[in-house]
Each structure stands twice: as C-alpha cells, then as structure tokens.
Image (cartoon, rainbow, N blue to C red; front, side, top):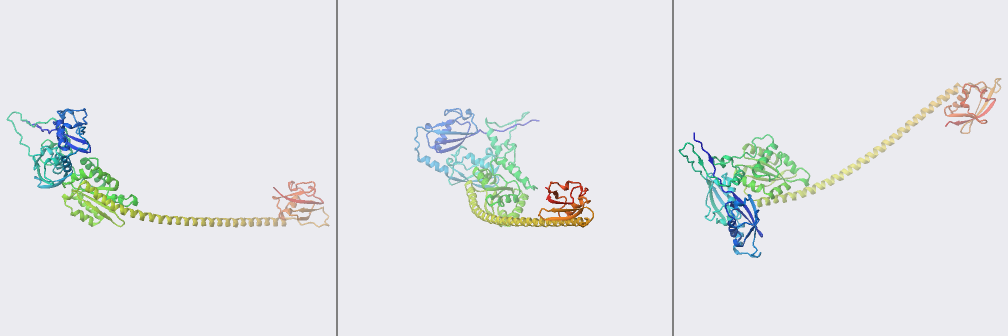
Length: 563
C-alpha cells in the first residue's frame, strides 16, 4: 500500500526591530534573509536620512557591514537598535520627514470584506501599523492564519508586509480590501510503488509556529490538514452549578488565550461582587465593572487582546473597580446572567442587555451602588479604542467620586452623631452604675448595722439572761447578827462604784464570782484583785472558801478588765 508523507512548506522567519532615532521610534518586521543594508534603506524612507550617513548600532555581535545577512547574526525574535548621525545636526529636518511623521500619526479606516463569511469589518488602524500586524489582527477575527490569507485591494507599492500603512500607498482616510482562505493545491501522486507529496520547508519556521499557537491554530490547521476554522474551548462551561467554579474556568481560559496581563476577575457570585463593591464603608467602596464576553462576536478577540489586556486599562480597573465577568456565548449562560441582573439591578438593566446584538459584544457595564438601588452608569461596546475606553472609565469614575464624597460626608456625620450618642449612653450607663453601686453599698452598710445591732441585742439579752440566772442562783445574803462567820466584802468597779455584800465565810469563791458576774462583770472578762498585797483572786480555786482565800472578816477588792 503506497504511503504518503506530508511536509509543510515553512515560511521565512520574521524578525522584529525597534529602531530609535533621537525623539522618534520605528518598528520594523523583516525576513531573516534580508541584509543590514536593506534595513538602512527602509530607515532612509522612514526617517528621511541618507543611508550613507547612518550608523546603525545595538547589534549583539558589535558593528556589522551592510552586506551582512540577518540570519548569520542569529538574532532573537525581538531586537532594539538605534541610529547615530554624527554628520547631521540635531536641528536638521526636512518637509518630507515632517509629512511622513504626520502620515504615521493618521488613522486609516480599513473596510475588509471576508468573502467566505460574507461579512464586512470596519477597523481603524494608525499609520504606524505594519501590513503584517493588520494581517495578524484579521487572523484573530477570521481564524485564517496569515500564511493562508489571500488578499485583494492592496496597492502595488505594498509589496512588503513590514511596511507601515502610511507608506503602503493605501487610500486615506478609507481603503477597501477583501480576504479569503487560500485554496491549497491538490496533492500530486506519482505512479510509483511509494508515493510522496513533498512541500519544501524553508530554513526558519519556529516563530510562525509560535504565532500560530497564539492565534489558537491547532496542529491539523498548521500542517494544512484542517478543513474547518480553529476550535477554541469555551470561556465558561454551560450550566455550571457553581458561579465561583465558572469564574475560575473563565479566568484560566482568558489567561490561556490572551496572556496573564488582564484585569483581576472577581471569583464569586454577582451578589458577592456587589456586596464587595457597594456595601462596605464609604471610603472603601468601588465601582463594579461587569464584563460580558461572547465568542460569536468578531470583536471579542480584538477587544480582549488590545483593550482588556492593555497595561493602562488593567491598572485602572484594578485600582478603582471590582471586575466581574460572564460568558454569554451559550444561551443557558446568558439566561442565567439575565436572571441574576434582574434580581440585583432590576428589569431595566436586563432589557438593556437583551437589546444588544451578538456583533455588538463584548460589553462592559459600569455599575454604581446607591443608597436605595444600583445604577448602570455606562455600557461600553466592543467597537472602541483604548483611549475611548479609558475616557469612559474615567468619566464614570468622576461621577462615582462625587457620589462617594457625599456618602463619606454623610457617613462621617452619622458616625459623629452615633459617637456622641454612644458617649452620652456610656456616661448615662456609668452614672447609673455608680448610683447602683452606691445604693448597694449603702444597703450593705445598713444591713450590716442591722445585723450588728441584732447581734449586740442578742448578746446583751444573753448576758442579761445569764446575769439573772446567776443572781437567782446566789445564796441569800446572811444577816449581820448571824452566829456564823460572816465576811463583808466591798468591791470597787472600773467606773468607781462599789458593790457591797455579806457572805458566809464558808462560801466558795465561785459564789463571789457569780455575784460579780450578776452585776455585769463576767468571770471571762474581769479579774478580782486584792489591794494589798495584790493578789488575783480569779486565779484561785473557785471551790475554795472565803476563809481559805483569807477574805475574812472583811476585804476591799477591785475589778480590772482582763487583757
């Protein structure tokens, strides 16, 4: 069975140059088969400087001659050079150079007809754009790789893709072109036992392979075996149950297509993004930017790569906005978005989104939170420029800043009022607390006094009861004429009063002690002392008699409190 091998013809490797000359900068894209002298020839046209007076510097290998082929220098994809003209004064200029600069700054409207799709694209490009860059942008829109594009309408002078539009000879301000996919020739077969179709491969194809991957071209397309346009994985899966998971997929796919430099998309539901943007403190609030993507729109690739990934736009959105994204390519996802918008922003916003057609996408909705409702300040369509997008973002930011200042003022005044009220409430609470503590202390003091008084009364009553019982238990005082031995005792109290009583000499000291206690001077608290010699009677045996204690026939004693 004869086998067939397909070898794709490789395109010449293209090298990018950025050439600086005084206050000017020139971008060049050339095949690596070109020479250094040809670069000078292009710069002569661009800068209006004779090639013989140019010194082209910045080569990695040092100075090179005009006949040096770029391939022999082994240059990287992107290179920076600069031109020195020591023989030309810095102030020298020509009318040709001025006219060239004016044409580079002009904007050209290219109306490009895609014949297979029967669609027209109206695209604005600055005069400094190269034909190669235009073709790459069209590759994004039509999914036709640059090497497969077949054009009509370019003037004969546009013979080099590295030429700028200003020098290509196209009509100003509008020029019409058409593009289609170049049909590949039929494979020739040899009537031999083994047939081989061979397409010659040029020396350097690596950069074109990289470019093809940037435009989403798969291997079958690259090698000429594809029959349809390139297939991109969806930005967001259809019918995803979790909004956060859908946004993670969207962010990953966006980064895969357009690079890591892009706005930081909020990962979470639209409700959570609204809460983050609108419902914090007034100083922390931000605008909400809702990016609505649609892969069916021809503007999506250009808008994402040139607008959403521009450094100025990314920085401005990151500083001032909460950016939330959604893919409406699939009808189910679009219906889900409309439901969310109705719930959070009302039917007016939902109806506004419905009115936009597919080719008007992508959309960027700028939403501002208000006290009672959320307001859509602006709806930015995909057919815009970086400058216009920045102007509209800044305009929305001005409106938001004015409203934010009012909100901050109201919030500060409200917080000041609440602070005064809290201070008053705290002072009142502390006053009540002090009154309560004072009242409780007074109540405790009164209760303690009542308790002590009660204890005192109980003690006095107990003492009185003991005194009375002792008094009743005393033996009767004997008469003076009694035949028994009588001891007459005179007892001086601490107050100076005297207690006098007659006792039988045979009475025990305990009777004396009980008598003294019955008069309010208990044994536990007082000592009974003799005057001379000084003796402590309370230390004697209470069972001994008065005679034995030598308190006969009479004695003067005195009471002293025990220590």
